[in-house]
Length: 347
View 1 (cartoon, rainbow, N blue to C red):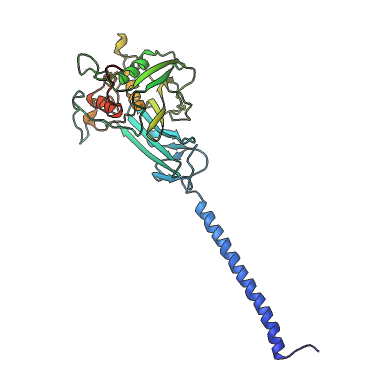
View 2 (view 1 turned 60 degrees about the vertical axis):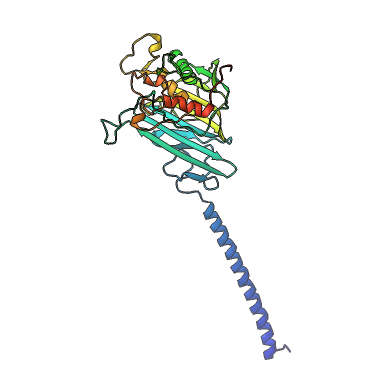
């Protein structure tokens, strides 16, 4: 006969109870692992502003973005006044500038692959209407020593090759080439020699005309770099109507490695500047003045804010037929010397 003693029943009951407890323990462990996986998946979920496809808003995201939260590389980030840039995927960083009829915009995107962080800063300036409460009369540009530096520059003593892109509207090269020369040569109307001396220790080397447009999109945004410095005309039909020109500068660490400038040939009237002897047609913009300003960005100069500095080339404003920015003020020159030092007379 079967053992039906209380002890026997106790042994069978104990075995079943142990199995139940073990099953319960395994279930609890499984639940814990599943819950942990769910938590990890939730942690990996991108933030709300990191939407797939389309441009991302710099205003909606934090200034510093971890790539593990949202990998911005290859994505378009849009800053103030519609200015945007593609975040480089090759480990470089980019600064975008746009000069407008009503002010200027800046978008700086620094990529730190070692730390896995992308830092985005953006700034927009609009020309105030009338005389605002905090308006300050412009200083004499020949005595105004204000300047701002960008995070990168070319090597001291470098001869920077640049190509000219003629665009499709048949606009002259003279305004563009004069503007490049004015900034590199520190042209000024502050003295009888018409230039500051000694010049900065950096020079321009014209490498000829190219059939490749600047790496600026039809929206006047920074695209992907191609290793060639290009300045010239470009039709940008999708850009905001206030855009006059855009400059994109790519850098690694503190070293500039490429810079492209595009002047808007569509919907804008241009004047080569007084050097060709013709008067400025009403509503036209001086190509030499705008290019001088944009070449300042190429060399590492930023905008100098404040109405009191409006006489400087790197002021974030330019008016129709205004040829003032074509010649440097003291601050513009001082900024170049701070970046590159002085070129020796024997160089």
